[in-house]
Length: 170
Image (cartoon, rainbow, N blue to C red; front, side, top):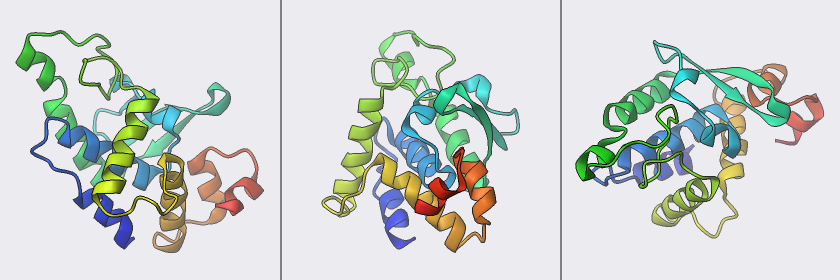
Protein backbone atom coordinates (compact mmCIF):
# COMPACT_ATOMS: atom_id res chain seq x y z
CA UNK A 1 0.00 0.00 0.00
CA UNK A 2 2.84 2.38 0.86
CA UNK A 3 4.59 1.61 -2.43
CA UNK A 4 1.35 2.14 -4.40
CA UNK A 5 0.96 5.54 -2.74
CA UNK A 6 4.61 6.38 -3.45
CA UNK A 7 4.07 5.53 -7.11
CA UNK A 8 1.04 7.83 -7.34
CA UNK A 9 2.86 10.57 -5.43
CA UNK A 10 5.71 10.50 -7.96
CA UNK A 11 3.49 11.94 -10.71
CA UNK A 12 4.17 15.61 -11.44
CA UNK A 13 0.70 17.01 -12.05
CA UNK A 14 2.15 20.15 -13.67
CA UNK A 15 3.63 17.99 -16.44
CA UNK A 16 1.75 18.05 -19.78
CA UNK A 17 0.71 14.43 -19.24
CA UNK A 18 0.43 14.53 -15.45
CA UNK A 19 -3.34 13.99 -15.24
CA UNK A 20 -3.21 11.24 -17.87
CA UNK A 21 -0.35 9.40 -16.20
CA UNK A 22 -1.94 9.70 -12.74
CA UNK A 23 -5.21 8.37 -14.14
CA UNK A 24 -3.45 5.42 -15.79
CA UNK A 25 -1.65 4.48 -12.56
CA UNK A 26 -4.82 4.95 -10.51
CA UNK A 27 -6.82 2.65 -12.79
CA UNK A 28 -4.12 -0.01 -12.74
CA UNK A 29 -3.77 0.09 -8.95
CA UNK A 30 -7.49 0.18 -8.20
CA UNK A 31 -9.09 -1.91 -10.93
CA UNK A 32 -6.57 -4.63 -11.73
CA UNK A 33 -7.07 -4.30 -15.46
CA UNK A 34 -4.77 -5.68 -18.12
CA UNK A 35 -2.58 -3.41 -20.26
CA UNK A 36 -4.61 -4.16 -23.40
CA UNK A 37 -7.83 -3.38 -21.52
CA UNK A 38 -6.54 0.03 -20.43
CA UNK A 39 -5.23 0.95 -23.87
CA UNK A 40 -8.53 -0.07 -25.45
CA UNK A 41 -10.77 2.11 -23.25
CA UNK A 42 -13.03 4.40 -25.22
CA UNK A 43 -14.86 7.42 -23.85
CA UNK A 44 -18.07 5.60 -24.73
CA UNK A 45 -17.05 2.75 -22.37
CA UNK A 46 -17.50 5.04 -19.35
CA UNK A 47 -20.88 5.50 -17.72
CA UNK A 48 -22.09 9.12 -17.60
CA UNK A 49 -21.59 9.30 -13.83
CA UNK A 50 -18.16 7.61 -14.12
CA UNK A 51 -19.13 4.81 -11.73
CA UNK A 52 -18.68 2.04 -14.30
CA UNK A 53 -16.31 1.20 -17.10
CA UNK A 54 -16.73 -1.55 -19.68
CA UNK A 55 -13.47 -3.16 -20.76
CA UNK A 56 -12.77 -5.76 -23.40
CA UNK A 57 -10.54 -8.49 -22.02
CA UNK A 58 -9.03 -11.71 -23.29
CA UNK A 59 -11.07 -13.49 -25.92
CA UNK A 60 -12.93 -10.23 -26.65
CA UNK A 61 -14.99 -10.76 -23.51
CA UNK A 62 -16.47 -7.62 -22.06
CA UNK A 63 -16.88 -6.98 -18.36
CA UNK A 64 -17.93 -4.07 -16.20
CA UNK A 65 -15.54 -2.56 -13.73
CA UNK A 66 -16.92 -0.41 -10.93
CA UNK A 67 -14.87 2.70 -10.31
CA UNK A 68 -14.20 3.89 -6.77
CA UNK A 69 -13.97 7.56 -5.84
CA UNK A 70 -10.20 7.71 -6.49
CA UNK A 71 -10.75 6.38 -10.02
CA UNK A 72 -13.69 8.70 -10.69
CA UNK A 73 -11.67 11.72 -9.54
CA UNK A 74 -8.66 10.74 -11.65
CA UNK A 75 -10.76 10.05 -14.77
CA UNK A 76 -12.69 13.32 -14.34
CA UNK A 77 -9.47 15.33 -13.89
CA UNK A 78 -7.95 13.73 -16.99
CA UNK A 79 -11.04 14.17 -19.17
CA UNK A 80 -11.07 17.86 -18.25
CA UNK A 81 -7.63 18.29 -19.86
CA UNK A 82 -7.73 15.48 -22.47
CA UNK A 83 -6.81 16.91 -25.84
CA UNK A 84 -5.23 20.01 -24.31
CA UNK A 85 -1.99 19.31 -26.19
CA UNK A 86 -3.87 19.08 -29.50
CA UNK A 87 -5.60 22.39 -28.87
CA UNK A 88 -2.35 24.02 -27.77
CA UNK A 89 -0.57 23.01 -30.98
CA UNK A 90 -3.47 23.41 -33.40
CA UNK A 91 -3.67 19.65 -34.00
CA UNK A 92 -6.72 17.45 -34.10
CA UNK A 93 -7.39 14.35 -32.06
CA UNK A 94 -6.99 11.37 -34.38
CA UNK A 95 -9.06 8.86 -32.38
CA UNK A 96 -11.81 10.96 -30.86
CA UNK A 97 -13.25 8.03 -28.85
CA UNK A 98 -9.95 6.87 -27.29
CA UNK A 99 -9.77 7.74 -23.61
CA UNK A 100 -6.00 7.84 -23.35
CA UNK A 101 -4.14 9.89 -25.95
CA UNK A 102 -0.46 9.94 -26.81
CA UNK A 103 1.50 13.15 -27.30
CA UNK A 104 0.66 12.72 -31.00
CA UNK A 105 -3.08 12.86 -30.15
CA UNK A 106 -3.79 9.29 -31.18
CA UNK A 107 -4.71 6.30 -28.99
CA UNK A 108 -1.89 5.60 -26.56
CA UNK A 109 0.11 2.45 -27.34
CA UNK A 110 0.96 -0.48 -25.08
CA UNK A 111 4.61 0.49 -25.33
CA UNK A 112 3.96 4.08 -24.25
CA UNK A 113 1.98 2.91 -21.21
CA UNK A 114 4.77 0.49 -20.26
CA UNK A 115 7.37 3.25 -20.66
CA UNK A 116 5.22 5.61 -18.58
CA UNK A 117 4.78 3.10 -15.75
CA UNK A 118 8.52 2.34 -15.77
CA UNK A 119 9.28 6.08 -15.63
CA UNK A 120 7.24 6.47 -12.44
CA UNK A 121 8.61 3.27 -10.93
CA UNK A 122 12.07 4.79 -11.40
CA UNK A 123 10.99 8.19 -10.08
CA UNK A 124 9.42 6.68 -6.96
CA UNK A 125 12.46 4.52 -6.19
CA UNK A 126 10.61 1.29 -6.97
CA UNK A 127 12.51 0.23 -10.08
CA UNK A 128 14.69 -2.84 -9.88
CA UNK A 129 12.16 -4.64 -7.67
CA UNK A 130 10.59 -6.62 -10.49
CA UNK A 131 7.59 -4.31 -10.87
CA UNK A 132 5.88 -3.96 -14.23
CA UNK A 133 2.51 -3.06 -15.70
CA UNK A 134 1.31 -6.61 -15.06
CA UNK A 135 2.63 -6.51 -11.50
CA UNK A 136 0.33 -3.52 -10.88
CA UNK A 137 -2.55 -5.86 -11.73
CA UNK A 138 -1.29 -8.26 -9.06
CA UNK A 139 -0.92 -5.34 -6.65
CA UNK A 140 -4.52 -4.25 -7.24
CA UNK A 141 -5.76 -7.78 -6.60
CA UNK A 142 -3.71 -8.08 -3.41
CA UNK A 143 -4.89 -4.68 -2.13
CA UNK A 144 -8.53 -5.57 -2.84
CA UNK A 145 -8.14 -8.88 -1.02
CA UNK A 146 -6.02 -7.71 1.92
CA UNK A 147 -7.36 -4.19 2.52
CA UNK A 148 -10.73 -4.20 0.76
CA UNK A 149 -12.00 -7.49 2.08
CA UNK A 150 -12.94 -8.64 -1.42
CA UNK A 151 -13.76 -12.35 -1.55
CA UNK A 152 -11.55 -14.39 -3.89
CA UNK A 153 -14.59 -15.48 -5.96
CA UNK A 154 -15.57 -11.85 -6.53
CA UNK A 155 -11.93 -11.02 -7.27
CA UNK A 156 -12.02 -13.68 -10.01
CA UNK A 157 -14.89 -11.78 -11.67
CA UNK A 158 -13.26 -8.37 -11.19
CA UNK A 159 -10.05 -9.58 -12.85
CA UNK A 160 -11.89 -11.37 -15.65
CA UNK A 161 -10.42 -14.79 -14.89
CA UNK A 162 -12.05 -17.96 -16.18
CA UNK A 163 -10.69 -20.17 -13.42
CA UNK A 164 -10.53 -19.54 -9.68
CA UNK A 165 -7.07 -21.15 -9.47
CA UNK A 166 -5.73 -18.38 -11.76
CA UNK A 167 -6.95 -15.79 -9.27
CA UNK A 168 -5.47 -17.71 -6.35
CA UNK A 169 -2.01 -17.37 -7.92
CA UNK A 170 -2.31 -13.63 -7.43
